[in-house]
Image (cartoon, rainbow, N blue to C red):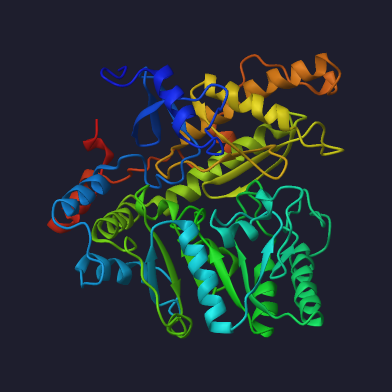
Length: 493
């Protein structure tokens, strides 16, 4: 239903332009959507139109999940701030979050955003190692605070002056990088680039204090580092006296599918873990988890809002939902369906250069042709707008802004995946046909647009999966407390 008493669209747009910084960009800047409500994996605009949300990984367990909302409302009515005092919510949440991690990662610090978390991680690394130099990847983004902008090269302007304490390693991208998939053992070879940086820094009288990376480099367009990359990198960094930071802001809490934390799929254990965005389903909360030795090296820290009772109550509710609705398993199965679907249509489309990802992190890289791999930036933008017309919201990432990325809420289903793949294929076929008509691509390679169909039994060997896969019998067997905690979307509508 259209919004009854809201501010008119044009007035909202004008106020946005008048009172909010121009650098604060909107999705679909030319024709932005005014969102007034969210539910599950869907967003609703001011006219009542429903959009499938394929980008909002902040709403990790789905927009306005009733269990999460209820937990926040209940705690907000009791106590919102307990800075400097004991509170059960904070202590219970810290204990539960730590229980999901390896034994060595046993001390929590709470803040209010992923940027704050990464900034604190650098501070902890410097306090423990007595060194300030940091290695990051050239396709990385770690936040918008001053220190984090310096280690987020993907956001640097061409004239950006790299600070002396920042050392930039190549992103281990086997499609578009220094080494491609044809190289034997690209993981160790890419890791050797980090080793060279450590050696060069030492020759210049500098010592590396920390290496920071996401387990899957999202800002580069969902780049999954090759096997053994992190194992070798962590070894080189530790041998030099530095510590390793895993930025799980985009990848953590089951999104990668196989494991609860992204670093686990690489068989490594970092010294510091940061998590933000999804941890409270959109409510401001982030955490830094580290070893006791590193934590104890920091003599003083405080955060007025970090770990407040409302945030921690919501954080606990998010963990309830992930566990009760088996969302890590769902991310694995539905993510496989989504990725397999794109791979199934890749051969039909001359502009699909690469399909990659893990779990519910999927990237599709568009190129002008598969030989030159020239980035198809304009085509990616046009495709995003065409999908918007189909009521699908999709993101664009990568240094060349040519990678369509999908990081949807984890309640995303196989039916959603099929819908996205089919509409993606049809819209891209139209773009490819138009490109061929003006000589930008080979017309003989353009697929026929009519009746694109990608059956689920082709794109995945998994049966159609419901996120809410609990039978009535299973529910009856559970104790009363568990039944009360079980958060079900059926209560919403």
